[in-house]
Length: 223
Image (cartoon, rainbow, N blue to C red; front, top):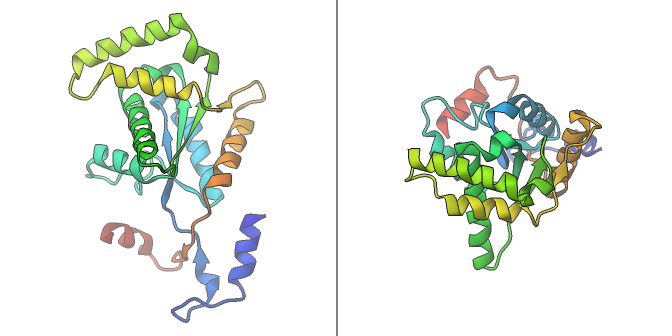
């Protein structure tokens, strides 16, 4: 319904430069950050495509607009986490036992703490329990296994990995209502995630430039 209303509005108006609003489409900006392990890349690709179809353009590491070739990927990742309105955390065993996904989760948690301290709340974290469950986060045996894994990772990279922050970030997720994968399948799960995101992230508008060969690439390079 939202897509139809945008199209009908654009057909009867002109833009501020005098051009037809028929040229209006949606601007790909990173309002949503998709945090996941590499094992869930296919699922997140599906999710990203569905979000883009609803005119919400997530930060997804397979997109050149998110991680340009030759760019400083840690800076792009952490800048996006600071700027996005929503962080979607695709939780799995692989996520919780991997360095980069957990570092992203810590960055999200630190942003939440910073905003709480400043008396504002502009950032929302949505946990998605993908092949795991909310009960796992409070399971003593699982938490002990994860802690042992984190301690080993910290030995390899003590400057980047602070086990106490990882524990606090995962504990933070316990109090959040999340989206849980059930037997109904991944299609239903993706729809539920997209619906939740669309409630809090507005669609973005841009000038349609598909008729100009290479225009989008030129704009990305010039930004």
